[in-house]
Length: 370
Image 1 (cartoon, helix red, strand yellow):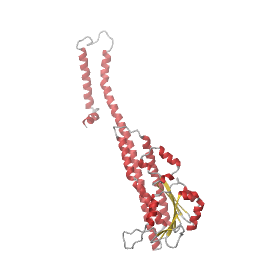
Image 2 (tube, one colour; image 1 turned 90 degrees about the vertical axis):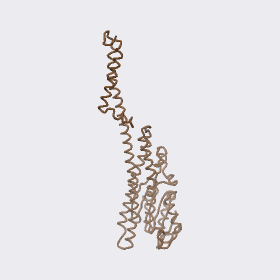
Image 3 (cartoon, one colour; image 1 turned 90 degrees about the horizontal axis):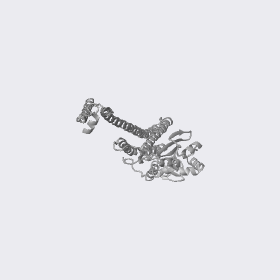
Image 4 (cartoon, helix red, strand yellow; image 1 turned 180 degrees about the horizontal axis):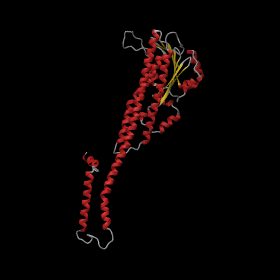
C-alpha cells in the first residue's frame, strides 16, 4: 500500500505518513494486497486514519463482480465504481467471465467493455482506494501528483492540487468516465459496419450470434451507466446533506464538489445516452433488414405470380389439345400449330399489357431502368 500526503504545495510519498493537520492522505492499495491479508490491511488503515472499515465493506472492496454503488456510515463513505479494464486490468476478471468472453465472438470494440471495480473510502482527511494491479487512471494520477511543481498564484496555466479527499476522488472518477467517452467513436464505427452488413443485398447476413452478443454488451453498458449514475446521485445527495454551507469557505468547497460531481454525472449521462442510441440504431438496422428481406420475398412472389398467370392459359390450351379425341378443331389442319402458337402469343401479350396497366410490373421495370 502506497501512502501520499497531499497539501497545497507538494505531494509526499511516505509509507510512515499519517493524517496531519494540513492537507490529507491518500492510501492506495491493490486488490491483491488487500486479499492477501484483509485484517492486517484494515488494521493499518485504521492506524493511519482512525476509522475501522466494516467487514461487509471490506468484502465489497475485494469483490471483483460488485456493481457500482454508494454507502455511508458514521465514520466514512464508500463508493464502488466500475471502470474499464485497460493495460492488463482484464487479468483481474474472474476466470468464468474470461472464458465466456473468449467463447463468444464479440467485435473488438465491444471487447473493450470489460470492467473492474475501484473502491473509494472517504475518511475525514484521508482517501483510501482499492483497485486493480495495473490501472491506467490511478497510475497517471499518481505520476501527475508526484511530478507536481508548485507555481506562482498569478500563473493562469498552473495546475492545482486536490484540496480534499472528495476532490481527488471526483478527479479520478472523471478520468475513469472519460475512458467510456473515448469508446464512442469505435462503437459507432462498429455499428456502421453492422448496418452495412445487414443491408447489403449482395451478401446475406448470417453472423447473428455475434450480433446478439453485441446487443447484450450494449445492454450491459446501459445497465452499468445507470448503476454509476445512481451511485453518484447518492454521493451528490450526501454532499448536499453533510457539508454545512453556513461558513463561506465551507460553502465554496461544497459548491466545488457539487460542480465536479455534476460534471461526472453529466459525462455518465452522455455515455448512457450514446449506448441507448447505439442499441436503438442496431435494433432499427435489424428491423430494416427484416423489412428488406420481406420486401424482397414479396417481389419474388410477385414475379412468380406473374409467371404463373402467364402460363396458366397456355397450360389450359396445351391440356385441351392434348386430349385423346378423334375429331378436334385444327388437329388435322396444316396451319393449326401456327394458329395455336399465335393465339398463345397474343394471350401472353394481352396479359402483359393488362398487368402493365394495373401496375403489377411497375417495381420490376423501374428497377431495370435504374
